[in-house]
Amino acid sequence: MSIPQRFTGSTVLVTGAGTGFGAEIAVRAAQEGADVAVHYRSSRAGAEATAERIRVLGRKALVVQADIAERAQIKRLADEVWGHFGRLDVAVNNVGDVAREQMSWRDITEESIDHVLAVDIKGTLLCTHEFGARMLEQEGGGAIVNVGSTVVARGSARAPQYAAAKYGIIGLTKSYAQAFAPAVRVNVFAPGFIETEATLGRADWKNGRGDKLRELTPMGRIPGPAELAGAALFLATEDAHHITGGFLIADGGYNMIGA
Picture 1 (cartoon, rainbow, N blue to C red):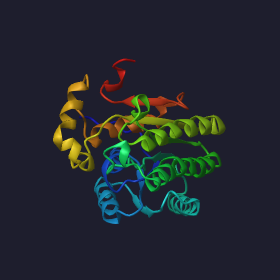
Picture 2 (picture 1 turned 30 degrees about the vertical axis):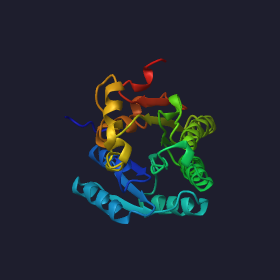
Picture 3 (picture 1 turned 90 degrees about the horizontal axis):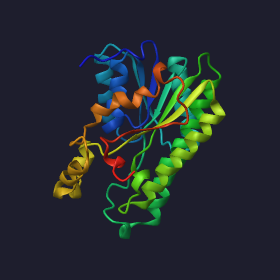
Picture 4 (picture 1 turned 120 degrees about the vertical axis):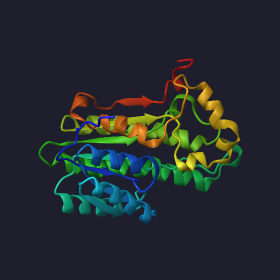
């Protein structure tokens, strides 16, 4: 497959880029010509591995650590990125907590509710706020992609706090899209199920849920993270220059059933 060069000369930041979908978005951005800031909270080894994949492609990589649930750490992260690269053209706010270990709504805890909302809503909001405000001050503005989920179409009997958090991301995205226009665009990329290592390792996935979801997906399969990375980055390209406050779904048609 020929990979387009949509980010030549650009700088891209991806949060949660040490593993999974975030790592593949970061590498895809480098494949398309970008220098990349690789954020992580606790997976330092994963972030360094992602950065090495980027450097092998001949692009620059900066590894940055922060807990995005804390505003002071987000400001420090931004200081490091702007201090190193001089600007940031694209921010992909990928970090999110899906309450992966919770298999039923009956198992919900107040601690889990607080953590999921703090990471998914507060963290994404603060990142959008900080990065977008700085982009407004630089020539050429920028673009922000917040990673949401198609869970908002059906809800989640397994983890209601996760569905609530992803709804919140839509609201904050639309709000900042209005606030930052026209210089900085803000959109949501909403993948469906992705077969990351973490997903493939879940007990319910191995016990038949993955097979059932494949049957219910019109495209007949569930992709790995690398397959969707280019679609997520589309919202930050010049081809998407008239899209802001948008919600782009990439789920193989799963949620069009009954729509």
